[in-house]
Image 1 (tube, rainbow, N blue to C red):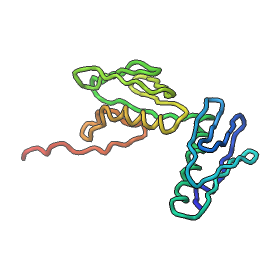
Image 2 (image 1 turned 120 degrees about the horizontal axis):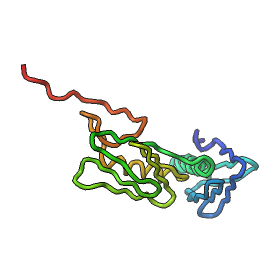
Image 3 (image 1 turned 30 degrees about the horizontal axis):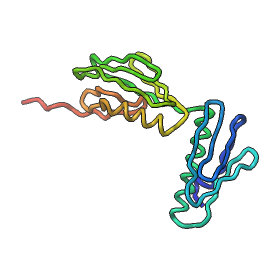
Image 4 (image 1 turned 90 degrees about the horizontal axis):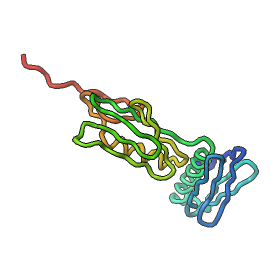
Amino acid sequence: MSRIGKQPIEIPAGVTITVGDKEITVAGPKGQLIVPVQPNTTTKVEGTQAIVTRKDDEPKSRAWHGLQRALLNNAVVGVTKGYEKKLEINGVGFRLSGGGQEIEMALGFSHPVKYKAPEGVQLTTNKMEITVSGIDKQKVGQVAAEIRSLKKPEPYKGKGIKYVDEVIIRKAGKAGKK
């Protein structure tokens, strides 16, 4: 059995899981998410647990088994707690403004950079920090990665957009003449 796939998913109070032929709907206090059903897997809701099983022991089926369980667990956590990623902007003259669905940044280019978040993702700003939050783990991570890619941190001065917990390994500058 898959180590991840065989673990049952605890369903907290207030969350309902509806299993269909092609998709699983997870509804909770923060919203609703739809998880596609992976091939060769079956999902059953028993009491306060959701259990994912597979039909055979083929390598592809084992992979789908773990993926199905992980996607379903991410949906359950998303509709109860939600997900968030924090980004930090470092650099002289870099500025940040806005919030909600759209932010505007001055990142050392000749023009301001505007970023509009997709539906279901919220952006909040606090001085030089951006918080990306939402119920869909994939969307939150994708938006954070897209914002970071606008000005990746460089290794000499550390200027750019980085995750708050990311460590930028610094390089030494040019060696001086003797």
